[in-house]
Length: 398
Image (cartoon, rainbow, N blue to C red; front, side, top):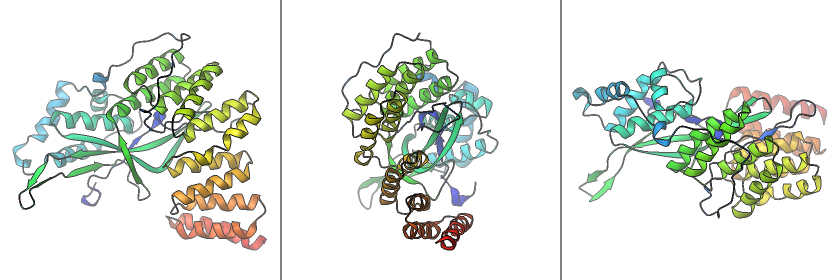
């Protein structure tokens, strides 16, 4: 990493603690979505989410997430306390250590706690975020996590599609006094493991919600493997941390649906939709459940609620718009693509979505206009050529 990229890695918390969207599968196979919107639901009232259909299994404790063995601690502290680098601010020394550490880090791997990530020199990006906080805590540096709205990363196993979200790690230096202004100021580094010029910073992720992501990751893996007892136990741990978190409630609902308890799944979906500003992911999952149980009229009615949901991540709307498009619901898809561009007029793919939908609806003029806009906004020459090629096809055809 060079100086230009200093403190700009993206912490991509993969997983399974994130949006799991419904995806078309083979033949009669139904695909679930398990989203994770990272939305706080602290204003919600309590709901009885428990089920006696599962056996509770021992899961890691919160203190285990950030645990480091003595050798790992000493390795970091020896570097951090080196007399020759004490003129460098502490948060930058932490960055420099991570820069050296990650140079040989294997990014493919399971969700590890700090100790395993350190000793194995491997893990997914949530593991790296956990490790960052573990080191920062050793030397008293404040860490804050912030949501990032950016291009999602898709993964699919069995009948579950996962879409990962972004979180940045902000590491703060101790406060300094500016004697000239009699004010304190803070400096920080932003640790961003996969930087993108298309990222837009969202709100703060509270510590309890961040910690619950660890359990979400493990639970999602267990859910994919159909280890329902372990998945339930991990989600129960997440509920103890953040009892009204939309992510956890939504993932629990997916677990209940996948294991055949449609009634309890529906009660959780309806609860979130009735007691919050809504969730694109929850609504999408609930519509899927309604259609799976033959309640198509109710499903259509709930689809009309998409436009009333408050969600500041344009990529979620883009995902749902694509889902509507794949289901040949072109009028709904167009409204959702337009909502995406209203929120984020800089996204070329949302204009491309409008273009292909206008084409399906028989409006060639609007299709060309939207495709032209997609080409203008393209981030790379490759994308620009792709959109212009499609525009040429439209021009030749109409």
